[in-house]
Image 1 (cartoon, rainbow, N blue to C red):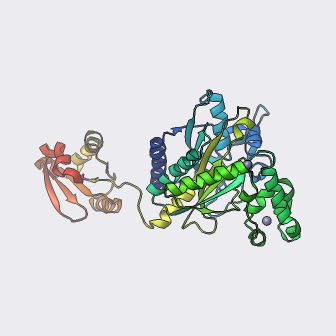
Image 2: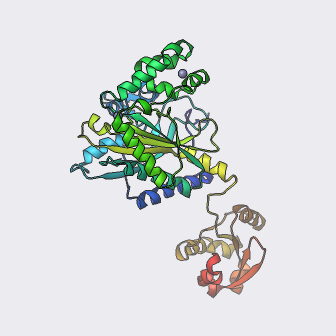
Image 3: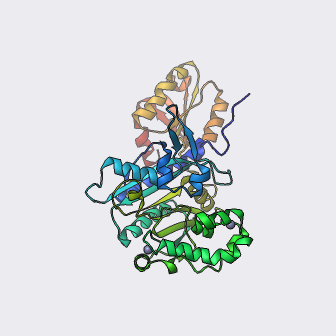
Length: 423
Ligand SMILES: [Zn+2]
Ligand SMILES: [Zn+2]
């Protein structure tokens, strides 16, 4: 009996891997331009890191973590999101110990034990960025610009939504909680079971509920920002001004809270077309208390995360049928005993000597080889038979036009020159 993949997991096959590589390369290139350095943290961390960093009351920590005891009987968890691990590493590394700004980016798999559905997996890969040490609206806007530049280069059509969710200061987040509770109090019997629990433990998450009946009730809520403290209002206002000045289009969504507890004052979410009802492709915000919550000093921070699976869905819906992979330039076709001996040396020469993407199939008839050459999408077929070797003339066939050129054995070194830029 064959062994199947685990539920909620997927394999990336070569055709798709080309799109993955493009996303990863774009993330690395753009992050590099913005001065963010790559950080790689372990997949496995102490469970406590996420309980304290992400929040015990979040759905992620309560329901979705892959948590187990290791052989030393320590509770460990497969990373369910990126930020807590990066904060831990930031603190342990001592970078930024003097209060200087530190900018990280990562590309890493996350694990959540949730019900698999379209575009949602139990292992999914996220890229993200975290910017420590600066509390200035320009840092928030620069972080958004980084994310949008990545999307622009990947040709994704998107919309930016922003909100002010209030901060941890007394009278700010607490008033927002009270305001939310007051608003939903009389409608509670009409709301879903989850929301009734959230009402007690984490009322802001009610605004996030995707159940139709709850969304209808949420419709009339005026928003979190209006209840926030004057500092939050001012900070948020300055961000909006900067977004305007930098011609970044956005919509305000006064109900946007994101699924995580750690955000303070400013959150944003980017939705993309082609993803269906759950159209969020990335998002983030400011989290000014997490570094302190995880044992550091008072270091402000802002960041984002974006799921690569959804980014690729958005890319593909915008450019249906687009091939992201590279095709071979030359398909080498062999016939005869002498040619058989030449196969590997010729391929090696093309690949290593001339840096040409070349391929071949072995143990097949001439006809089957030509068929394979066609299917591969190669630009040229290089035909080597015993007769060609004896006569010292080879055939190079342009697979698109059918045109054939004769190459003399002494000219093989010049293949690049013969075809100039086309090879
Ligand atoms: Zn506040
Ligand atoms: Zn609900």
